[in-house]
Image (tube, rainbow over all chains, first blue to last red; front, top):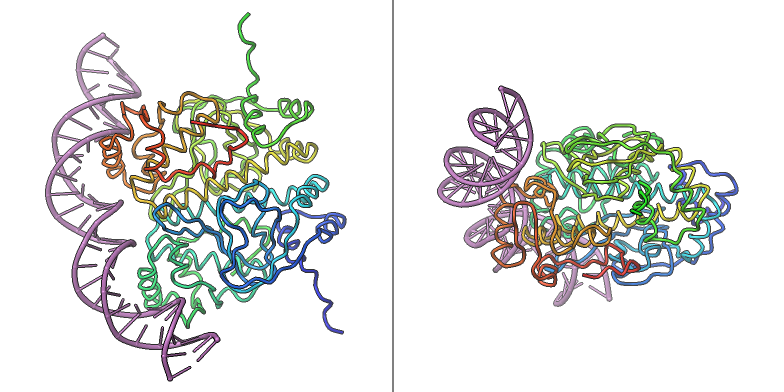
Length: 248
Length: 248
DNA sequence: CGCTCGTTTGATATATTTCAAGAATTGTGG
DNA sequence: CCACAATTCTTGAAATATATCAAACGAGCG
């Protein structure tokens, strides 16, 4: 009488349904997408900058991130992904990858032939629409990151990153948003906030001193959500989760 | 025997056709989109952060930009738009605007009821696909901006901005990419590159001293495209214009 | 248990910001 | 079309947030 094994893509479907309502047919078509599951190790690449990937990729478990290396050797991280996220349609659909997608931790991914994704978008307009929405929201998040990296100080940037991660965890129904493990080294946090590992270290310490967070290794607890939101200049509107009625 | 007055939306259609091939029906449906044309003055807002816009918006002439104001009062510009660009579907489709869209210069826009856009995306899958592509490419550009602002020095950032602008001008078939007028004040350049107006001024002067650009008021000429590309760490791959065979 | 990778801390360097004021350009009303 | 007002641009000097360099410390792993 245990839970039936959930379909590997069900988390992704649930996430897409944040944006539209699917008919049973739409849902069935999504779950019927051909795919193979791969287990990957931390640090393993899913897509390399310059690749011509043939598959879309859904993260089933673990965490992943996207990044690019610039001319002076610096690395910039663009996003952190959690289970259920479509970690790559962009590169696959556009034909040639313009950035890297890499595992942050060990985890599983599902690879879906891009042709099948294209087909489902054509034949099931609501699915196509949901994919478009997904891309639009991602764009909104990128805009916020440009502002974060461009116009906020180190402490605000990091607080903002923590708020976003917490809120997206909550929206994905993964763990508690006020106490979680941030699966990133300080160097990775630095590359996500355009800082130096050294400065990230000092700034995290500062946030802790200010009573905004508590840390133990990589686990973070947030004693007072409102305070962290204020410190991080965090306005969740850009995540467009209204309909999902995510509240912390 | 003069040119027939071109359809106001034809530039937009041409731009979308960079991403797919349309049937005559698709093209006709796009040109038949209901719309009203508005003339706007420089600085006028098209969308305010927080709005619930009911229309998508196509830029017909002039320049526009998107930006957001952060908590400390800083402004971050996310993109510069030129004629033919869809300057707003994102806010209209997502329901509530998460940033501002504003005219950079005087110009005309076409407002299209969002419902009509949604309908055409449903009924004309190739159009829906092109819109999705458009959004994906925009995401790629945002990623590059995150990297630009986050991991490059002032001189490289500004050179990169100039390269992108030149290349997109060329791709849009507007003016010459090696000599153009950048319709931005130095303060706006500062907000696009996350710098200070003062520092932009000094850095532009530096680029000029290094022989990378020549300036006269707001017009810029690029004596040697390759050199500027090198100085700006500019790799146009992220614009995904391959098919458009844009060469400078 | 030793090694590697990540974290922590200190001292110093630097790119960029801030503040301030004058010059030039653009816009505008008479 | 001129004169005044308002931006925008330019330049200098001083301040600062963050980067760089360097080294020790700690924790996980084979």
